[in-house]
Length: 216
Image (cartoon, rainbow, N blue to C red):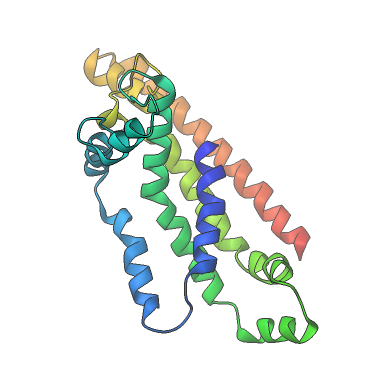
């Protein structure tokens, strides 16, 4: 929920600010794609170093500003670090999908809105947002499903700690199957986990599809 609440609006805002024509288009697209090309374990390593108070840019800066930041010992700091890491890694996917929806809108819609004297908010509310409905559905579903599978990044950064504050169900499953070798309970737990994700994704898809049809 936290990830979707941040990444979807942020992705839409960045996509709206990106240029539609000129040499800056491929530059922006390449820059947006770079975080998606970084392997998950490398992302965890980057943020593990980035958040360190002694050598990390973010940790050292926050410590210099007077913030008592330590993701190793403080559960809140660990959660904030994991959320920021995921936002940095996956917001680009939302941006690229939203941008694809925006560039597919014909110029005639904007010309008609300009003639009618529509405000910037009206253009977004009645032209851009409805036209992005399908790509937003894809973005929400992909990020929703993938957020349940998060494992490598928080495991590398925090190892599930401090304590068990960032021990997500995926990490707990691996510890049960690999660490404790309880394959039976781990298999049953993973099937239930899969069914929960499938059910929630179906509910998401149904609700968002019906909402899009009602707008039409």
